[in-house]
Image (cartoon, rainbow, N blue to C red):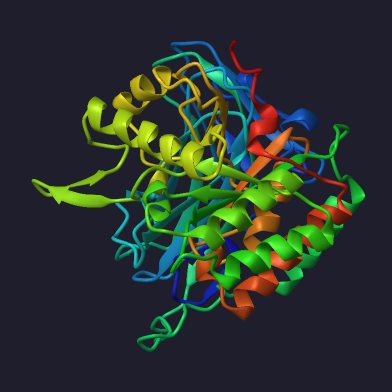
Amino acid sequence: MGLLAAGIACADTAVPLSNGNFEEGLAGWNADPAATEWLAVAPEAALLGEKGLRVQAPAGVRFALTSEPVPVTPGKTYTVNFWSGGPNAGGAVDVKMVFRGPAGEELPPAMAKIRKWPGANVAGGTYAANSLLAAAAPEGASRLEVRIAGSGKTALGPVYLDDFRVAELGDEPPPVVEKGQANPIPPFDPARVRALEAEVAANPYRGKSPPKIVLKLDDFGAIRGGVHPKWSKVADFARARNIKATFGIIGNRMVEDCPEFVQWTREQHEAGRIEFWHHGWDHAERTENGKRVMEFSGESLEYQKKHLADTNRLAKEKLGFALVSFGAPFNGVDENTVAALEADPDIRVWMYGNAKNPAGKKVLERSAVSIESPTMIPNYADFLEGYAHNRGAEYFIMQGHPAAWNDERWDQFVKIVDFLIAQKAEFVFAADFAAPARE
């Protein structure tokens, strides 16, 4: 299971869970009498394989479905990894780790080695999402169950659940990364990667069209008046592969005298190979009263409006064109960002924006399909997990930070792109999703 647990330093061992993918219906799961009417194993709920669990119930109905137990050792940390999705119809399903003692009594979970909770509320949405639960087996515990339940407080679903996996974390300390060294690519299970590749090959798009891909590459700007070689490398690679990419410009990195940067950026823009987009003015953050404040999260409306306007003013002056697409630094936004964008005449696309409050822009949502996992580290295995569970989606906005990529990370990026090319994915600009500019 190691590939999705990018933040887990300890080695983990898979613990067999009976029919965690629901390919055998509800075999290996125990439903209370109230649950059977509201649960169905169906092809449309499949997030991997041929079948998945569909949960749908009206308000006022409480129910539970529990897995067959797996043995545990007190003091050991266990994880439950699963995927959820379905129409964005409201209501959430409770998924919880339940430890029991020898007599079947439920015991409260102990604190895990990692910063994860033993329960989650999951709902449908545009994309399938991954959840990782964790807890340590308490003293006296002999077994662990996975419980899926509806509280009855609101109408529920449909919500799709699939691909439940349990693992026990090892006791090895995290690897030591020397100062100045880059964190390595997280470990992964080669057999899992091969199985996911075979799954995609057998059913690439689930009857839909190949996806559109936006390579959302962050933190571009002039370096000593020119372009950093790592960014030139990405542009050369995109040209060689005949694909499009997008570079997020930080506004104040154009303030200096940078004729080489300006000429290079204009040439890429005019050639139609690279979209340059608005990534804020300074990418700044600070702490105020113990709270993290980011450029577009926690700052005033006037501050945010000025930062949007200043970056595009400089882009027009130096580059000769406005930046049509926007993505906030740290992807941190608030209600003032919505108001600031509503007042901005240049920006028409909002990457990783607020789909419920789109500010009059085309919002391109985030998904579990990305270049990096964790941030700064391209990770083919983790990308493949997200892609395999989200086949059939219209588009994926995939974030990366080329300036942080060493040779090993670059190789992972190339592997991801070449996989997508083989899948006949169409690489596009974020601006390609924009509605025509208002006259």
